[in-house]
View: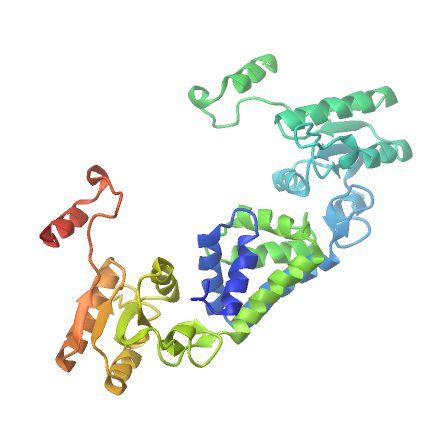
Length: 199
Length: 199
Protein backbone atom coordinates (compact mmCIF):
# COMPACT_ATOMS: atom_id res chain seq x y z
CA UNK A 1 0.00 0.00 0.00
CA UNK A 2 2.43 2.59 -1.23
CA UNK A 3 -0.27 5.27 -1.37
CA UNK A 4 -0.41 5.40 2.42
CA UNK A 5 2.55 6.44 4.48
CA UNK A 6 4.41 3.68 6.30
CA UNK A 7 2.94 4.56 9.68
CA UNK A 8 -0.62 4.55 8.43
CA UNK A 9 -0.13 1.23 6.62
CA UNK A 10 1.31 -0.26 9.78
CA UNK A 11 -1.61 0.96 11.88
CA UNK A 12 -4.14 -0.39 9.37
CA UNK A 13 -2.38 -3.74 9.37
CA UNK A 14 -2.29 -3.97 13.17
CA UNK A 15 -5.96 -3.00 13.45
CA UNK A 16 -7.08 -5.48 10.80
CA UNK A 17 -5.70 -8.33 12.93
CA UNK A 18 -8.40 -7.71 15.52
CA UNK A 19 -11.45 -9.97 15.31
CA UNK A 20 -14.39 -8.65 13.29
CA UNK A 21 -12.32 -5.83 11.81
CA UNK A 22 -11.75 -6.22 8.09
CA UNK A 23 -9.56 -4.19 5.76
CA UNK A 24 -12.18 -1.47 5.24
CA UNK A 25 -13.01 -1.05 8.93
CA UNK A 26 -9.32 -1.00 9.82
CA UNK A 27 -8.84 1.80 7.30
CA UNK A 28 -11.78 3.76 8.70
CA UNK A 29 -10.56 3.29 12.29
CA UNK A 30 -7.01 4.26 11.35
CA UNK A 31 -8.16 7.54 9.83
CA UNK A 32 -10.33 8.20 12.82
CA UNK A 33 -7.33 7.66 15.09
CA UNK A 34 -5.23 10.03 12.99
CA UNK A 35 -7.83 12.70 13.58
CA UNK A 36 -8.20 12.11 17.31
CA UNK A 37 -6.47 14.47 19.76
CA UNK A 38 -3.02 13.10 20.64
CA UNK A 39 -3.91 12.71 24.33
CA UNK A 40 -6.92 10.60 23.39
CA UNK A 41 -4.75 8.30 21.27
CA UNK A 42 -2.31 7.94 24.15
CA UNK A 43 -5.16 7.07 26.51
CA UNK A 44 -6.40 4.38 24.14
CA UNK A 45 -2.94 2.90 23.52
CA UNK A 46 -2.16 3.10 27.24
CA UNK A 47 -5.40 1.38 28.19
CA UNK A 48 -4.42 -1.55 25.98
CA UNK A 49 -0.93 -2.06 27.27
CA UNK A 50 -1.99 -1.41 30.88
CA UNK A 51 -4.88 -3.84 30.73
CA UNK A 52 -2.73 -6.51 29.10
CA UNK A 53 0.06 -6.04 31.64
CA UNK A 54 -1.88 -5.62 34.85
CA UNK A 55 -4.68 -8.06 34.45
CA UNK A 56 -4.44 -11.54 35.90
CA UNK A 57 -6.71 -14.40 36.86
CA UNK A 58 -8.47 -14.54 40.22
CA UNK A 59 -6.81 -17.49 41.98
CA UNK A 60 -10.19 -18.70 43.22
CA UNK A 61 -12.66 -18.30 40.34
CA UNK A 62 -10.29 -17.59 37.41
CA UNK A 63 -12.06 -14.47 36.22
CA UNK A 64 -9.89 -11.63 34.91
CA UNK A 65 -9.01 -9.16 37.66
CA UNK A 66 -6.34 -6.79 39.02
CA UNK A 67 -5.64 -8.53 42.30
CA UNK A 68 -5.05 -11.98 43.69
CA UNK A 69 -8.77 -12.35 44.52
CA UNK A 70 -11.50 -10.72 42.45
CA UNK A 71 -14.06 -8.38 44.10
CA UNK A 72 -16.76 -11.07 43.93
CA UNK A 73 -14.67 -13.74 45.67
CA UNK A 74 -13.66 -11.18 48.33
CA UNK A 75 -17.22 -10.03 48.93
CA UNK A 76 -18.48 -11.43 52.25
CA UNK A 77 -22.08 -10.71 51.28
CA UNK A 78 -21.98 -13.10 48.33
CA UNK A 79 -22.85 -16.72 48.99
CA UNK A 80 -19.46 -18.37 48.55
CA UNK A 81 -21.09 -21.80 48.64
CA UNK A 82 -23.13 -21.34 45.49
CA UNK A 83 -20.85 -21.55 42.45
CA UNK A 84 -22.01 -20.69 38.95
CA UNK A 85 -19.79 -22.21 36.26
CA UNK A 86 -19.54 -20.04 33.13
CA UNK A 87 -17.51 -20.33 29.94
CA UNK A 88 -15.90 -16.88 30.07
CA UNK A 89 -15.74 -13.54 31.86
CA UNK A 90 -18.26 -11.98 29.46
CA UNK A 91 -20.84 -14.56 30.58
CA UNK A 92 -20.06 -13.71 34.20
CA UNK A 93 -20.62 -10.03 33.36
CA UNK A 94 -23.95 -10.89 31.73
CA UNK A 95 -25.20 -12.48 34.97
CA UNK A 96 -23.74 -9.68 37.09
CA UNK A 97 -25.73 -7.16 35.04
CA UNK A 98 -28.94 -8.83 36.19
CA UNK A 99 -27.97 -7.76 39.72
CA UNK A 100 -29.93 -10.69 41.16
CA UNK A 101 -27.40 -13.48 41.47
CA UNK A 102 -25.85 -13.61 44.92
CA UNK A 103 -23.50 -16.54 44.62
CA UNK A 104 -20.01 -16.64 43.14
CA UNK A 105 -18.56 -17.92 39.86
CA UNK A 106 -16.07 -20.23 38.29
CA UNK A 107 -14.77 -19.22 34.86
CA UNK A 108 -13.77 -22.14 32.62
CA UNK A 109 -12.22 -20.06 29.80
CA UNK A 110 -13.71 -22.23 27.12
CA UNK A 111 -15.89 -25.27 26.58
CA UNK A 112 -15.12 -28.85 25.67
CA UNK A 113 -15.14 -29.13 21.88
CA UNK A 114 -13.98 -32.39 20.27
CA UNK A 115 -14.39 -30.64 16.89
CA UNK A 116 -11.83 -27.97 17.79
CA UNK A 117 -9.71 -30.42 19.77
CA UNK A 118 -10.46 -28.74 23.10
CA UNK A 119 -10.57 -31.39 25.80
CA UNK A 120 -11.40 -31.17 29.53
CA UNK A 121 -7.75 -30.39 30.31
CA UNK A 122 -7.76 -27.26 28.15
CA UNK A 123 -10.36 -25.52 30.30
CA UNK A 124 -10.27 -24.67 34.03
CA UNK A 125 -12.00 -27.86 35.13
CA UNK A 126 -9.17 -29.25 37.27
CA UNK A 127 -9.23 -25.91 39.10
CA UNK A 128 -12.98 -26.26 39.72
CA UNK A 129 -12.58 -29.76 41.13
CA UNK A 130 -9.66 -28.63 43.28
CA UNK A 131 -11.74 -25.73 44.56
CA UNK A 132 -14.68 -28.02 45.40
CA UNK A 133 -12.34 -30.33 47.32
CA UNK A 134 -10.92 -27.42 49.35
CA UNK A 135 -14.03 -25.40 50.16
CA UNK A 136 -17.52 -26.21 51.26
CA UNK A 137 -20.06 -25.89 48.45
CA UNK A 138 -23.83 -26.32 48.43
CA UNK A 139 -24.56 -26.00 44.77
CA UNK A 140 -22.83 -25.90 41.41
CA UNK A 141 -24.97 -24.09 38.83
CA UNK A 142 -23.82 -24.93 35.32
CA UNK A 143 -24.34 -21.88 33.11
CA UNK A 144 -22.36 -22.87 30.03
CA UNK A 145 -23.88 -21.83 26.69
CA UNK A 146 -26.79 -23.68 25.21
CA UNK A 147 -24.60 -24.79 22.26
CA UNK A 148 -23.31 -28.27 21.47
CA UNK A 149 -20.02 -27.47 23.22
CA UNK A 150 -21.78 -25.86 26.19
CA UNK A 151 -24.07 -28.86 26.64
CA UNK A 152 -21.19 -31.33 26.33
CA UNK A 153 -19.28 -29.38 28.97
CA UNK A 154 -22.33 -29.27 31.23
CA UNK A 155 -22.78 -33.05 31.00
CA UNK A 156 -19.10 -33.61 31.70
CA UNK A 157 -19.05 -31.34 34.76
CA UNK A 158 -22.25 -32.89 36.07
CA UNK A 159 -20.68 -36.35 35.91
CA UNK A 160 -17.56 -35.14 37.71
CA UNK A 161 -19.31 -33.21 40.46
CA UNK A 162 -22.28 -35.46 41.29
CA UNK A 163 -20.19 -38.17 43.02
CA UNK A 164 -18.97 -35.54 45.52
CA UNK A 165 -22.55 -35.17 46.77
CA UNK A 166 -22.78 -31.48 45.85
CA UNK A 167 -26.06 -30.42 44.23
CA UNK A 168 -25.60 -29.81 40.49
CA UNK A 169 -28.09 -27.69 38.52
CA UNK A 170 -28.27 -26.37 34.97
CA UNK A 171 -29.80 -23.01 33.96
CA UNK A 172 -33.10 -23.42 32.09
CA UNK A 173 -33.26 -23.56 28.34
CA UNK A 174 -36.41 -22.40 26.51
CA UNK A 175 -38.19 -19.61 24.72
CA UNK A 176 -36.50 -16.25 25.43
CA UNK A 177 -38.62 -13.58 27.10
CA UNK A 178 -40.40 -11.59 24.41
CA UNK A 179 -39.68 -14.35 21.88
CA UNK A 180 -42.30 -15.11 19.25
CA UNK A 181 -42.93 -18.87 19.00
CA UNK A 182 -43.32 -18.55 15.24
CA UNK A 183 -39.68 -17.58 14.81
CA UNK A 184 -38.10 -19.94 17.30
CA UNK A 185 -36.26 -23.06 16.15
CA UNK A 186 -37.69 -26.50 16.82
CA UNK A 187 -34.98 -27.64 19.20
CA UNK A 188 -35.66 -24.67 21.48
CA UNK A 189 -39.42 -25.27 21.28
CA UNK A 190 -38.95 -28.90 22.33
CA UNK A 191 -36.61 -27.85 25.15
CA UNK A 192 -39.18 -25.36 26.36
CA UNK A 193 -41.84 -28.10 26.32
CA UNK A 194 -39.63 -30.57 28.19
CA UNK A 195 -38.75 -27.95 30.77
CA UNK A 196 -42.34 -26.86 31.39
CA UNK A 197 -43.23 -25.97 34.98
CA UNK A 198 -46.56 -26.22 36.79
CA UNK A 199 -48.38 -22.93 37.39
CA UNK B 1 -19.02 -1.88 35.77
CA UNK B 2 -17.72 -3.27 39.03
CA UNK B 3 -17.72 -6.84 37.73
CA UNK B 4 -14.77 -6.05 35.49
CA UNK B 5 -11.45 -4.99 36.88
CA UNK B 6 -10.60 -1.30 36.58
CA UNK B 7 -8.16 -1.83 33.72
CA UNK B 8 -10.60 -3.87 31.67
CA UNK B 9 -13.39 -1.34 32.22
CA UNK B 10 -11.07 1.43 31.13
CA UNK B 11 -10.03 -0.43 27.99
CA UNK B 12 -13.66 -1.18 27.10
CA UNK B 13 -14.55 2.47 27.59
CA UNK B 14 -11.68 3.70 25.41
CA UNK B 15 -12.50 1.21 22.66
CA UNK B 16 -16.20 2.05 22.65
CA UNK B 17 -15.34 5.65 21.77
CA UNK B 18 -14.14 4.52 18.35
CA UNK B 19 -16.62 4.90 15.51
CA UNK B 20 -18.75 1.86 14.70
CA UNK B 21 -17.72 0.09 17.91
CA UNK B 22 -20.56 -0.31 20.38
CA UNK B 23 -20.50 -1.55 23.95
CA UNK B 24 -20.68 -5.23 22.94
CA UNK B 25 -17.95 -5.00 20.29
CA UNK B 26 -15.72 -3.04 22.66
CA UNK B 27 -16.13 -5.81 25.21
CA UNK B 28 -15.31 -8.49 22.65
CA UNK B 29 -12.27 -6.57 21.43
CA UNK B 30 -11.06 -5.93 24.98
CA UNK B 31 -11.15 -9.62 25.81
CA UNK B 32 -9.39 -10.43 22.58
CA UNK B 33 -6.66 -7.93 23.47
CA UNK B 34 -6.29 -9.48 26.94
CA UNK B 35 -5.61 -12.81 25.28
CA UNK B 36 -3.16 -11.49 22.69
CA UNK B 37 0.59 -12.00 23.26
CA UNK B 38 2.04 -8.97 25.08
CA UNK B 39 4.33 -8.09 22.17
CA UNK B 40 1.37 -8.03 19.82
CA UNK B 41 -0.49 -5.61 22.11
CA UNK B 42 2.58 -3.38 22.26
CA UNK B 43 2.83 -3.40 18.46
CA UNK B 44 -0.82 -2.37 18.15
CA UNK B 45 -0.59 0.37 20.78
CA UNK B 46 2.72 1.56 19.34
CA UNK B 47 1.31 1.70 15.82
CA UNK B 48 -1.41 4.04 17.06
CA UNK B 49 0.79 6.49 18.90
CA UNK B 50 3.46 6.38 16.18
CA UNK B 51 1.00 6.99 13.38
CA UNK B 52 -0.65 9.82 15.28
CA UNK B 53 2.69 11.45 16.10
CA UNK B 54 4.60 11.00 12.88
CA UNK B 55 1.98 11.62 10.28
CA UNK B 56 1.56 15.04 8.69
CA UNK B 57 -0.01 16.57 5.62
CA UNK B 58 1.81 16.75 2.28
CA UNK B 59 2.45 20.47 1.78
CA UNK B 60 1.42 20.18 -1.86
CA UNK B 61 -1.64 17.93 -2.00
CA UNK B 62 -2.60 17.67 1.71
CA UNK B 63 -2.74 13.91 1.84
CA UNK B 64 -1.50 12.22 5.01
CA UNK B 65 2.16 11.29 4.76
CA UNK B 66 5.46 10.97 6.67
CA UNK B 67 7.46 13.62 4.86
CA UNK B 68 7.11 17.14 3.60
CA UNK B 69 6.07 15.90 0.15
CA UNK B 70 4.10 12.66 -0.35
CA UNK B 71 5.45 9.92 -2.67
CA UNK B 72 2.90 10.84 -5.36
CA UNK B 73 3.83 14.54 -5.45
CA UNK B 74 7.53 13.58 -5.53
CA UNK B 75 7.06 11.06 -8.35
CA UNK B 76 8.43 12.51 -11.60
CA UNK B 77 6.55 9.91 -13.64
CA UNK B 78 3.16 11.22 -12.49
CA UNK B 79 1.55 14.00 -14.49
CA UNK B 80 1.85 16.89 -12.04
CA UNK B 81 -0.43 19.02 -14.24
CA UNK B 82 -3.48 16.81 -13.86
CA UNK B 83 -4.98 17.26 -10.41
CA UNK B 84 -7.76 15.06 -9.06
CA UNK B 85 -9.64 16.69 -6.17
CA UNK B 86 -10.92 14.17 -3.60
CA UNK B 87 -12.67 14.54 -0.27
CA UNK B 88 -10.25 12.46 1.78
CA UNK B 89 -7.19 10.21 1.76
CA UNK B 90 -9.34 7.07 1.58
CA UNK B 91 -10.78 8.29 -1.73
CA UNK B 92 -7.26 8.91 -2.99
CA UNK B 93 -6.36 5.35 -1.98
CA UNK B 94 -9.42 4.03 -3.83
CA UNK B 95 -8.21 5.62 -7.09
CA UNK B 96 -4.62 4.54 -6.46
CA UNK B 97 -5.83 0.96 -6.16
CA UNK B 98 -7.08 1.11 -9.76
CA UNK B 99 -3.43 1.62 -10.77
CA UNK B 100 -4.53 3.50 -13.88
CA UNK B 101 -4.59 7.15 -12.82
CA UNK B 102 -1.33 8.88 -13.63
CA UNK B 103 -1.99 12.39 -12.42
CA UNK B 104 -1.74 13.75 -8.86
CA UNK B 105 -4.29 14.64 -6.19
CA UNK B 106 -5.58 17.36 -3.94
CA UNK B 107 -7.21 16.23 -0.70
CA UNK B 108 -9.93 18.56 0.61
CA UNK B 109 -10.45 16.81 3.98
CA UNK B 110 -14.19 17.20 3.81
CA UNK B 111 -16.97 18.57 1.65
CA UNK B 112 -19.08 21.68 1.85
CA UNK B 113 -22.13 20.91 3.96
CA UNK B 114 -24.47 23.76 4.93
CA UNK B 115 -26.39 21.19 7.04
CA UNK B 116 -23.36 20.43 9.19
CA UNK B 117 -22.13 24.03 9.04
CA UNK B 118 -19.06 23.15 6.97
CA UNK B 119 -18.30 26.02 4.63
CA UNK B 120 -15.67 26.43 1.89
CA UNK B 121 -13.17 27.74 4.46
CA UNK B 122 -13.33 24.55 6.52
CA UNK B 123 -11.92 22.41 3.71
CA UNK B 124 -8.58 22.71 1.84
CA UNK B 125 -9.99 24.87 -0.98
CA UNK B 126 -7.83 27.94 -0.39
CA UNK B 127 -4.84 25.60 -0.62
CA UNK B 128 -6.09 24.26 -3.96
CA UNK B 129 -6.52 27.76 -5.40
CA UNK B 130 -3.09 28.76 -4.08
CA UNK B 131 -1.58 25.68 -5.70
CA UNK B 132 -3.26 26.43 -9.03
CA UNK B 133 -1.90 29.98 -8.94
CA UNK B 134 1.65 28.75 -8.26
CA UNK B 135 1.96 25.80 -10.60
CA UNK B 136 0.96 25.10 -14.16
CA UNK B 137 -2.11 22.87 -14.42
CA UNK B 138 -3.91 21.44 -17.41
CA UNK B 139 -6.89 19.83 -15.77
CA UNK B 140 -8.70 19.69 -12.46
CA UNK B 141 -10.72 16.46 -12.16
CA UNK B 142 -13.36 16.80 -9.45
CA UNK B 143 -13.82 13.40 -7.78
CA UNK B 144 -15.85 14.36 -4.72
CA UNK B 145 -18.56 11.88 -3.71
CA UNK B 146 -21.82 11.66 -5.58
CA UNK B 147 -23.70 12.86 -2.49
CA UNK B 148 -25.45 16.19 -1.91
CA UNK B 149 -22.33 17.54 -0.18
CA UNK B 150 -20.02 16.14 -2.83
CA UNK B 151 -22.05 17.68 -5.63
CA UNK B 152 -22.28 21.04 -3.88
CA UNK B 153 -18.51 21.03 -3.43
CA UNK B 154 -17.99 20.06 -7.07
CA UNK B 155 -20.16 22.96 -8.27
CA UNK B 156 -18.36 25.37 -5.97
CA UNK B 157 -14.89 24.30 -7.12
CA UNK B 158 -15.95 24.41 -10.74
CA UNK B 159 -17.10 28.02 -10.33
CA UNK B 160 -13.83 28.98 -8.65
CA UNK B 161 -11.50 27.24 -11.10
CA UNK B 162 -13.18 27.93 -14.45
CA UNK B 163 -12.28 31.65 -14.54
CA UNK B 164 -8.58 30.68 -14.36
CA UNK B 165 -8.92 28.98 -17.77
CA UNK B 166 -7.93 25.56 -16.45
CA UNK B 167 -10.04 22.66 -17.77
CA UNK B 168 -12.43 21.39 -15.09
CA UNK B 169 -13.98 17.91 -15.31
CA UNK B 170 -16.18 15.78 -13.07
CA UNK B 171 -15.98 11.98 -12.79
CA UNK B 172 -18.98 10.24 -14.37
CA UNK B 173 -22.02 9.31 -12.37
CA UNK B 174 -24.19 6.37 -13.45
CA UNK B 175 -25.01 2.70 -13.05
CA UNK B 176 -22.14 0.89 -11.28
CA UNK B 177 -20.46 -1.91 -13.21
CA UNK B 178 -22.32 -5.14 -12.53
CA UNK B 179 -25.29 -3.15 -11.22
CA UNK B 180 -28.79 -4.46 -11.92
CA UNK B 181 -31.05 -1.67 -13.21
CA UNK B 182 -33.97 -3.12 -11.28
CA UNK B 183 -32.33 -2.28 -7.96
CA UNK B 184 -30.88 1.10 -8.79
CA UNK B 185 -32.48 4.29 -7.51
CA UNK B 186 -34.22 6.67 -9.92
CA UNK B 187 -31.79 9.53 -9.48
CA UNK B 188 -28.89 7.31 -10.55
CA UNK B 189 -30.92 5.98 -13.49
CA UNK B 190 -31.64 9.51 -14.68
CA UNK B 191 -27.97 10.47 -14.23
CA UNK B 192 -26.94 7.47 -16.29
CA UNK B 193 -29.41 8.52 -19.00
CA UNK B 194 -28.22 12.12 -19.05
CA UNK B 195 -24.61 11.03 -19.19
CA UNK B 196 -25.12 8.56 -22.05
CA UNK B 197 -22.31 8.33 -24.60
CA UNK B 198 -22.44 7.44 -28.25
CA UNK B 199 -21.18 3.99 -29.20
